[in-house]
Image (cartoon, rainbow, N blue to C red; front, side, top):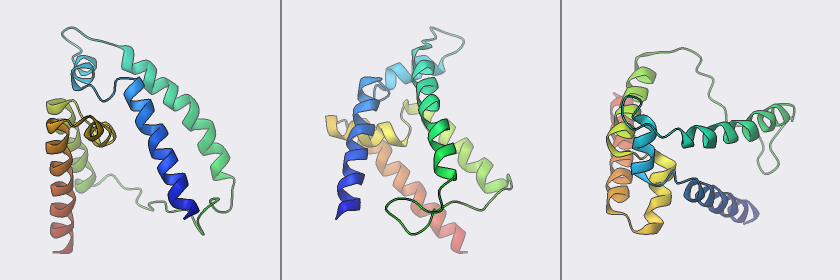
Amino acid sequence: MKKLIIALLCGIIFGLGLSLSQMVNPNKVLAFLDLSGNWDPSLAFVMIGALAVAMPAFRYIQKRRQPLLENAFHVSHKTAVDKSLLTGAALFGIGWGMTGYCPGPAVASLGFGSLEALVMVVAIYAGFFTERYFAKQ
């Protein structure tokens, strides 16, 4: 139960951060991605702020033998850049550029009742299930 409460609190804080930074506003994100048009660099500061918090936290976490609320770290051991990684990255970028949503802000936008976000989240899960189907073959 303790892990669920902490996960909920982390999700709420993450969602609030996305909302305050306007990462849930697809028009703001698309303006950030439009380098040749009316570029809005403000989201770069959000990303820099996130890195400023995450980088020292990862250094601290990597020194620990195990997480606080789990028996072991769950880290991918894949190190190669392969076809599936490049395909997934390309599909992610295309979806982000077309909609202005990446997965976190899309889920956070569900709280605002956004139909666009709902379509995006359904498409994300369709992608998950499609990948699992093809990975088994």
